[in-house]
Structure formats: C-alpha cells, structure tokens
Amino acid sequence: MRLAPMASVTNAPFRLIARECGSGRVTSEEIDARALLYDNAHTRALARYLPEERPIAMQLLGSDPDVLAEAARRLEAVGADVVDLNMGCPVSKIVAKGQGAALMRDPAAAALIFRFMRKALRVPLTVKIRGGWDERSLNAVEIARIAESEGVDGITVHPRTRSQQFTGRAPWEVIAAVVGAVRIPVTGNGDVRSRADAEAMRRATGCADVMVGRGALGAPWTVAPAAPTREERARVIRRHCQLIAGLLDERQALLQLRKHLAWYLGALPLAARTRAAMFQAPDAAAIQAIFWERWEVGPALL
Ligand SMILES: Cc1cc2nc3c(=O)[nH]c(=O)nc-3n(C[C@H](O)[C@H](O)[C@H](O)COP(=O)(O)O)c2cc1C
Image 1 (cartoon, protein in one colour):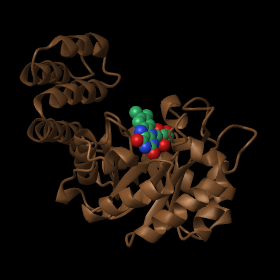
Image 2: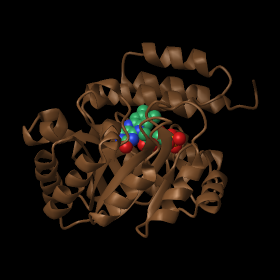
Image 3: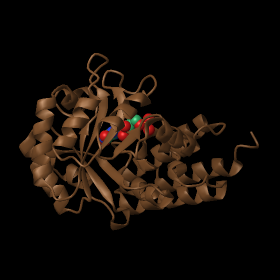
C-alpha cells in the first residue's frame, strides 16, 4: 500500500510519517513543470524531500512535451527515484491550461509527452490517469496501452472521470480493464479506506499495488500492516507534530498543524467544537495543547 499524492497535504512531514507507518514509495505533491524551470521558490520547495523518505516519486503537471522533459530531468537530478506525470487533476484552472485530466482528451499529445519524458529520464517514468474525461470518453485502456508502448514503466488508475471529480463510487472495473490490457504494473486507487478495502481492490482488479488518498487523512496508519493501538496512534501524531514544527516555516507549520490535527480528531465526540478552538488558537503550542486535552478525554467518556 502507498500514500497517494495530495496537493497541500503530502509534504515532507506527512510523507515521512506515512513511510514510517509502512507506506511503500511515496509521491510528492503535484509540481508545475514550467514553474520548476523558472526556478520559482514555492515550486522548488515542493521538490524538497528528506533522504529517509526514499524511494520517492516526484509528480509533474504540464502539457508541453519539451517543458515536461526538461522538468523531469531536473527532478531526476535532485534525486527523484521515479518521475510521475499527473493526468488526473480535475481542477478547472489546471484543465483549462490543457494539463492534468485534460491530457486524457488528447491521446496523440499524451503519446508525445510520454516519449519525450521517457527519453529524458534514466529513472522509471509512471503516469497517474483517470477513467477518462467523461462518461462518453472512457479511454483509460487506450491511454494505458499508449503509455506502455512508449516505454512508461507503471500506471496508477483513479477510475473516476474528470466530470465525476470525487463524487459517486470509484468504478474499480476500470482498474481491472487496465490490468487486463497492459503488462506493466498497475496501481489501483479510489475509495480505499482500510487494509480490508485494499485487499478487496486487489482481488477485484488484480492490481499490483494500491494507493490511498483521503483514507490516510488523519489516519496515516491505514497503510500499516496491523491496526495500531491508541498509544501507537498518539505516538504517530506526536511525531507528525514534531516534524511539522521542525521542518516547515512558522506560517506553514500553523496551517499544517491545524489541518492535520483537525483530521486526527476525526469523528471523536465534540470534534467540531475542538476544531473551532484550534482554528482560533494563536500558536503551535496552543493548538497542540487543545488537541491533546481533547484526545486525553478519549471517545469513551462522552
Ligand atoms: C486534497 C487532495 C489533493 C490531491 N492532489 C493530487 C495531486 O497533487 N496529484 C494527484 O495525482 N492526485 C491528487 N489527488 C487525488 C488523489 O491522489 C487520489 O487519486 C484521489 O483522492 C482518489 O483516491 P482516494 O479515494 O483514496 O482519496 C488529490 C486528492 C485530494 C483529496
């Protein structure tokens, strides 16, 4: 099982936590290829990682084959073990630029991108695709075959279409169809929230590995071989807080602490009230104090 890439979430602290919980290769947040070439400071930060996270895939967003190939080379130069191409991002301002899921609409353009990126890299190239653009253009199998024939080394399938965004059920049969169509490893993704779900996905689709996205928010131990005790979960959360405080600047640290601790509260009783208090707390110490006070009460008493 592996942690899925999530923009503004899967930064170095969370990726390392996921690795320590047992995740296989982690993936960076999506990185804009053109901004990387312009040496944009924010984009450069997205490509930073800790040696203990490796192996790490770094994911590129883009649409121009030359720009993507050059950006892929740069990522390899900073230590990416794998470069991944994002063909799934559904966000309007991204697809309006022909990037992310928009690449699913133009198989010929996608083929050229695969070819240029593959030629630029020595490390493996993988792609992360959706089922298709919409219900009338379910072309994951076609794109996967093209990817394989252009030398792409692995494919992740999130089988919803772009127009489905994150709604409805993830149709796992699309993953099975891709597994049946290519020989390169296929990773299944979509609606996995537990190890049992991951096993069910493997059985239903024959996929080689499973990626977990939203199921790991507030629960990075979803990827662990065994369910953790409450004490083990508390240890993971403490370590995550330390990594956030130690690795991020003060502003980012506050944002990330609020976000992740709110997820760790999950469905605990009074979680909404505690979340509101954390969002008003002035600094990292105060946010953590509110969280641990609530955590210590535990689910049983309320
Ligand atoms: C907040 C958020 C950010 C995401 N960012 C990315 C991204 O940067 N790159 C990417 O390929 N997918 C991204 N995704 C999609 C996930 O990797 C995954 O494909 C999707 O959430 C479905 O899996 P799940 O049902 O396990 O969440 C994002 C999803 C969420 C919820």
